[in-house]
Amino acid sequence: MANPEEINETLQVYAISRGISIDGTNALGFGQDGEVWRSSRKTAVKLLERERTYLNERDAYLRLRDENVRYLGIFAVPSLVDYDDEHRIVEMAIVSPPYLLDFGKAYVDRDAPYTDEQKEESLDACRELFEPNDWELIEDALLDLRLLGIEYLDIKPANIRAR
Ligand SMILES: Nc1ncnc2c1ncn2[C@@H]1O[C@H](COP(=O)(O)OP(=O)(O)OP(=O)(O)O)[C@@H](O)[C@H]1O
Ligand SMILES: [Mg+2]
Image 1 (cartoon, rainbow, N blue to C red):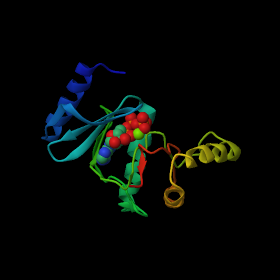
Image 2 (cartoon, rainbow, N blue to C red):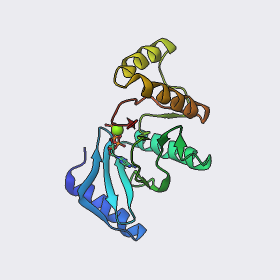
Image 3 (cartoon, rainbow, N blue to C red):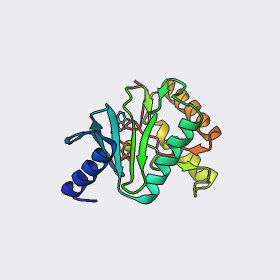
Image 4 (cartoon, rainbow, N blue to C red):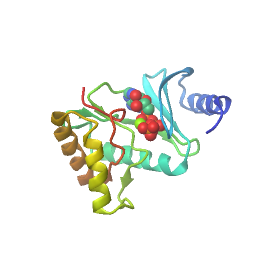
């Protein structure tokens, strides 16, 4: 994990290049793969640690943008505003629940390295984390994503908020 000074420096370089400002003291959220910051153009700026997770996230949001997808059923998906390959940054709209976000662990146009059995087992475990009514909506959203070539496996309440 990069240290806070490095993160802030990267954010500031990106902000200047886009003519915006980013408050590096006021994070919108944190996770395993990166940090998300608010910008002056009211966007979420996510800085990803690793190349692979960056590419997953960028490619998923590009696909959603190309296909004009703003919602998956009831779930808002952030629209892509900008991205930066050099600094591994994805800038997107800020969404409010219900939403589905975080494509760092998604597989775009490629198979996830798991058997159907492993995926079933994992889905069963995820189901427990949600209300039964919400789960049905989530399954529909996951199917919509698969039809778009995006396999979404990071199913958890921090990433998929039904309420
Ligand atoms: N576009 C957005 N709009 C609103 N909130 C957001 C947005 N992007 C991220 N967040 C908030 O920041 C948190 C962390 O973002 P995200 O899940 O993308 O990070 P991550 O590092 O990939 O997380 P994980 O640990 O799940 O892999 C989210 O759970 C959410 O609360
Ligand atoms: Mg997350």
